[in-house]
Image (tube, rainbow, N blue to C red):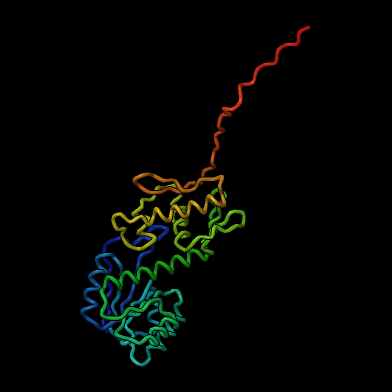
Length: 272
């Protein structure tokens, strides 16, 4: 078994709520070419990683305190399914990405049902493997954070991360998943302006293509739903050429002058 652990300089990727915890992953594989290229990419982005070249007991995986595991089930041999089931049972919070050779639909379904978070068929590009691992860990951390998060009150809106919804006086805004992620992200910034590119990368997971208006479209949809149930408040503010800021402010209505009536006159004094 080869056992190599590396920690390189660099920041961990950011999640919807800000920078994530340090990433620590293990790669259980014997494909030297894949491991070499993958390790270089992991070094470059600063993820701590360990390469395991042979079967590893579940107890040993538990002691590594990993964020995620990339595993070629072929390395585990005939006991691969039993091993995967035991691992998922012992570490339900561990992100597991199976990266293995050609497989049948039945095998992929079985692996996912046993608890794997994702399944990649080799040959695959290491960048895809890294992106999938990052996505798995990000979803798990968001889910764990939401399960314990207190409701956030903003104006008349109550944001409930544990229910993926926002409410006004008990009435749901009926947000889609992406719309909820947007309001959650904006509200977590606590009045800071978020650039469009930052919003896009943190919600979609990759860089925004020039000319993409997805962020503007979702902001428009979110505003419409907020105005429908909370018309007396303004929540999302546009900073033209930059991005958006979330800051609940009551709408101040300015009375229009009534141009159809003459100014009131003082009554004439009674003639005695």
